[in-house]
Length: 314
Length: 314
Figure 1 (tube, helix red, strand yellow):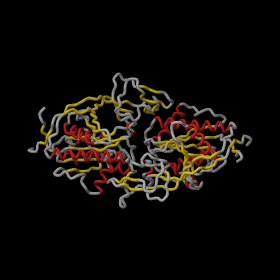
Figure 2 (figure 1 turned 180 degrees about the vertical axis):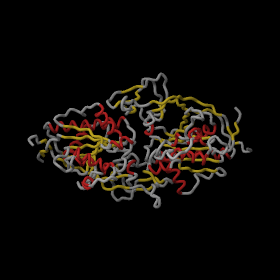
Figure 3 (figure 1 turned 60 degrees about the vertical axis):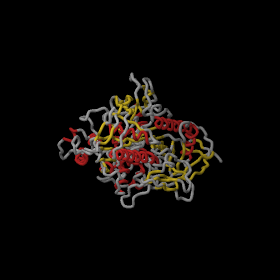
Figure 4 (figure 1 turned 90 degrees about the vertical axis):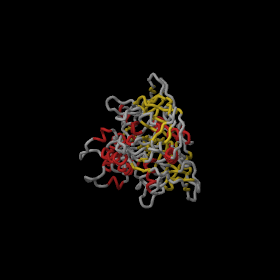
C-alpha cells in the first residue's frame, strides 16, 4: 500500500471539563492555564487548552441544563438562540466559533476532548468512524507507548450528521476517555495516565509535522453494536437491578450468550440473551443511568491503516 | 463485670437516601417500599424504612441546598423556619418529628442511616461516641458474621451538642457507611453487603429483644484525630494535588510520618508531616472536596464493652 500524504496538523485543541465533574481533564487544563504554559513546545504547532463547560465545572456537575457533549450536531449548532435556550446550547455555539466552524476549512485540525468514566475501561480513544487515519495512528502510538494502562479504540459508527460530540468540531478529533474514576473526584493514577496520553499525542503530532513517515499495518477496533438498559419497574421506571458482580469491572471481556448481566435487588441473576458474543464497555457508567444505558456492546475487528506522512508542501 | 440491663429496642428506623446520590441505601429502602414488606419479621419490633432526602434522591444529588446530614444538631433543629430556609433544614425538622424528637423519651430506639463512600472503607459503623453498648454490640455482631467485607467502628468523638447527623435523632444510632462506590451509581457487591449488614443488625435486635444475653469483651475502635485538606492554590483555592497513588484505596493502613500523602499535578510527592503514625480513612471521599477533607486520621484503640441483656420487665 502506498503512503498517504496528509496536511500538517498546525492547530490542535485539548479540551477538558466538557463534562464538569470529570476531573482529570479539568485539572489537566487548569494546571496548564495556571502555569500559563503550553503542554509541550511543539512549535510551529499551536496547541490551545480549552475548558469546555466552565459553568458545570464550577458546580461540579456533568452539565447545568443539557449535556454539552450532545450539542455538536450540525442541526444543534444551527438552531436559533432564544432567551430560554439552555446554557450548553449557547456554549456549544461559542466552542464551535472558537474551534470550528464544524466542517469548514477554518476548523481546528485536531480536537482531543478529555473525559473520565466510572467504568473500568482504561484509556479509550472514541470516535465516530474507523477511517480517520490520523486518529488511528495516534491511537496506535498510545497503545504502543503507554505502559501502565490498556489502550483501545471505540468506533461509534455514526454518520457525520449524527456525530454529536465536541471533538467532531475539528477536522480530526476523538475523545480520550479514561477510567475508572468516580465523577467529582480525582485519582492520581488516572490523572497521570491522561497526562501521559496527551503528551504522547502531542509527541506524535510533532513527529508527524516534522515529516516522519508512519508505517501502515492493522489495528484493533471495537465498533458499537448496541446499548442495553437496566431492568426497570414498568410503572415507576426506577431500576430494579444492578450490573452483576461477575460483569462489573470486566469491560472488554467477551460476554457470551447466557452469561450473567444483572443481579436484581431481590437477588435474581438475569442473563445475556443476545445470540452473538460481544465485548461490553461503559459497564455501569454513572452518567448513563439517565440515558438508559447500563452497558454498551461492541464487535471487535481489525482495521488496516495505510502508511501516512505529512505533506509539507501544502 | 456484671451484665448491664438495657430496655428493649421496640422502634427501629432504617434510613436511606439521606444523601440523595448514595444509591445503595436509596435502592434498599425503595426495594422494601416497592414490595411493601418489612425488612424482616422481627415483631413485636416495629421497623420503619425512611427515605431521608427524597428531593435530592430525585435529583440524584447529595443535597439540594445544604447537606441534610449536618442539620441535626439541637441548635439547627430549634431554628426558626422562614420562607428562604433551605429545604434540608425543613426536612431535618420533619425527620426529627417522625423519628425523634431528638433527646426525648419518644425518640426511636435505634436509627441506622445508610451511606456510601467512594473511599475503600469496607463497612463502617460511624458514631459520635465509643460508649453506646447497643451500637458496639451490633458492630461486633456484624464484624463476626460478615464474610465478604471488613467491618470497623469509627468514633467521631463529639459531644451530643455537636452531633449533627440523622442517626443522632434516635436513642441509639449509627451510620452504616459502605464503599467504595461512586456516588450516583450502584455496585452489586456493595448493595449486597449493605443488605446483609441491615439483616444482621435486625437479627441482633431480634435476639436482644428476645432476651439473649450478649457476652462482654473488647472491640477495636478508630477514633477521629484530625482531618487533612488537599494542598490548594493560595489565590484560587483550587486543589493542586491528588491523593498519592500509594495512599489511594489504603484506608485503615497505618500512615507513618514521612509516608507519601499527595502527588501534585506537576508530579511532586508531598509527605505526611505528622509526628504520630495514624490510620487514614475517608481517603479521597468525593463529597468531601467541598468540605476541605482529603482524608481523616484516626487513632486505634480497644474498648471494653460489658455483657448486656434486655430488661424485659421495663
